[in-house]
Image 1 (cartoon, one colour):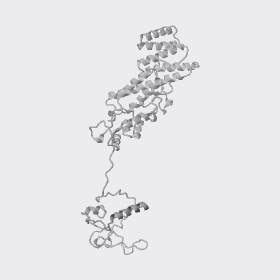
Image 2: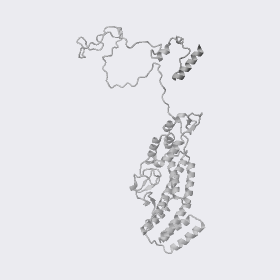
Image 3: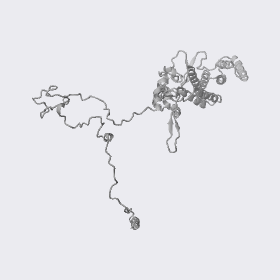
Image 4: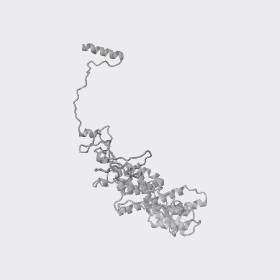
Amino acid sequence: SSSAQQKEAVVSTQSTGKPGVPISRSDHNWPLLTVSQGIFDKVAQGEGTSALEADINVDVEIEGAWGDEDIDLDDEGKLNSDEDGLVGGGSDGAGWDVDDDDIDLPPDLDIGVATVTGGAYVPPAIGTSTAKRWADNSQFAVDHLMGGAVDSAMRLLDDQVGVVDFRPYKSLFMSVIGRGSVCLPGLPCQMPLTAYPSRNIRENSKNSLPKKFLKLTDLVEKLQAGYQLTTQGKFAEAVTKFHNILLSVPLLIVESKEEMSEAQQLMGICREYIVGLQMEIARKELPRRTVEDQIRICELAAYFTHCNLQPMHLILTLRTAVNLFYKFQNFKTAASFARRLIDLGPKPEITTQMRKILAACEKNMTDAHKVHYDQHNPFVLCASSYQPIYRGKAVEKCPLCTANYAPQFKGQVCNVCKVAEVGKECVGLRIFPGQFR
């Protein structure tokens, strides 16, 4: 009975560990419905191409009017004596003369890849990504970075502003690349969707450009923070702040020539502060053991007063120079600094103090030590040696921050921006679309 068979199957499974024999076995296959193959089934199986094309077996021997003679060759591969070797010779019948085995073709012909036209599936070409389109549509380095095209962005910065050392740019580059796309969360356990924000979303997608990374107003706010650090005497932190602003300017995109002029002025301000503050840091690290050391300290203090700083900071530099030169008994030079300070209109107590120092200096208008400083001879300051380059002397400039250098520093990395090559010929700063028209 069926119950006895089930018990036997259970016992067999428990004793041997193998499944038992099925209770009901079918000795015949399931019935199948016979379906004839159509035209498209044959095409899919490679048995044909189309019902409208001729069903020709290319392996069939050509007969009839397609050429009724073969070339007769001897054992050495030469024509027998009864072959005349002439074109069309030996074919006296009607029909198509397509026996082209005797045509001599050059072996180096390139006919390209054959195109499949027999109805086979051809996958579509890979489209252009949005990030790649940004790099194709723009000549701004920041747009290339937003799309992840770091190599082309570096090439543009090298051509435009002479950047050769990109290590200081690493943090800025990573920030720009991170803002090029946004991730939109989807369903649980699913990958997020990636979107690419565009600044010209109303135009054709083929002309897409990324959102702006920075605005000029953002850098102006950072500039105010740098001013505050300078006032507080935190020179190292202020230099870092101004340096970050300086490197960010080539990554701007402005909308007018006025904004471009403001951006260039911003770079000039950062350059002056970086040169002056770095020189002041170096001055404080100098030893004071010998007279030569003290002369060099006074020189750097005097050069600092010629940096184009804000009036409140220029007052501080002049006060430092007055005190140093007065203590060094260079009363004539100290008096000139005191007059410059009074002309800036400082606080009343500062003005009173400077007038007292000026009155004391005027009693003995001499300099006890010779200092390499001439206030009446216009000069620019070398940003590396901190030596004056007087008018008429050769000077090299940084293509990015336009800092001045003596000729022997040409080819070196700029000491101000830390990225550009001194004296390199470049196209110039490109942050305004009108510059490419």
